[in-house]
Length: 599
View 1: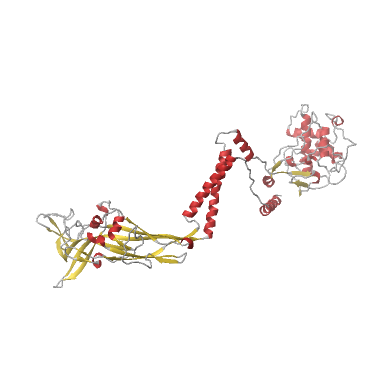
View 2: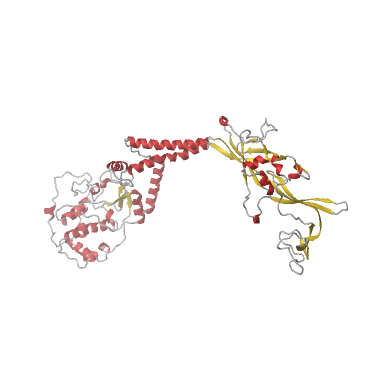
């Protein structure tokens, strides 16, 4: 049974998925205020979407830049002792997008390898007999290796003797003003080649009509690739003369924001400048920018010597970034599709003002609420079992009836054979314990309560000739037979098992040994017991009581023998449920005993 229902559910699901289409149902309110409010919100959303589309160029496909940088610095400056040209104040850099200009120096000339006193510091100052100096010891930030001796540095101070390049560097502070402070007049040419691989587009920052005598000016000449160093530093808000003393790091930013569309083509760089190092950092983290290098030579006597230079300079880093965009229909469609959801805001806000329970409830809002929201019961179907005397199986009907239950088609199932407490039809001694004749007089004469109308028109769905009643309930239009023949109520077995008072008293007493057969409602108990007894007899068990339908002829025969006071019966009440739950009930066998045949 469960596998049958599972296949039925699968077939219904497939048919529903491929053969049905669902769409929304709109409710139109004729209200100028609501209409104008909704359109106004939609207009605001549309304007915002258009601004986003045009300003951010969301209709374009994007690609990031790939670039290379080459720089050339030019300039000559004269100090008190020498001429400084490009080879003197610039050093080769390992990074192609970086160049360095020396602006200040501390020079220690004619150094040779030997022993000499260390420069005074708390770790190197000593006195005769002290143990500060240790042979082979190296003090952090020292110029050499200690020999273990304490010697005179000058007339007042003794320091540890070291093995190093002597004499050691004696100046610790950069000269003020900077030796090369006039380097602000140096110029640098920046060559920048870029490529956007997604669009196979290549260009550079130097125009074909480039003028070698031009000079960059943010307003007058913003595309010239030749820059004055003083202008670069001033653009960051710094003073070149101050920065030249101890050095620093400057970033030259080149931004390529390219539009490769033919109707609005533009792809030129924009230059900007900023300081990258932190000049406010403490001395412990070595602020500014400096380094040391040496120039070696040999004296006439063949001794190797060198000139030690501690250089302070400005390090310039060229940073290139940017994107290019070009019209792409897929990007446009994607953007439009993603922004359509924004228009739902208009409906959401209008509905919130229209039917929200958070706002003050007014007759107008209540009217709109009732019109917009409608409660609908889910689709229902009948779940019925029938048993005909001329068939050896049970018929299961799970469709909504279009006509009488007698003619409804269903699935053929085997009878349920599960035994339950109180089912005396399965007791071994039941046949011998129950009398075969009813010696008790009926409580109420059947002829007084129900007179079968011999002259009544025959019912189209009745095949036994004993059905009666004019009920329009399709579930009650059921005969005991599928084909014409004698009625089951005319058999002795029906009289003995269903109508016999002794049999019914025996069944009731089986469940309630102290049954009071003289109580006021004993007739109702006999009638209900007869219903259950018929179901156990014809359906095999009463676990499906709420789904089993007793034929019309049998039901009226029971009512005739055990009538209800007043003669009003509720009739058969079918168990209805959602289609999505019907099969679950069947598969899980959630058919509990609940007598709904209270008629």
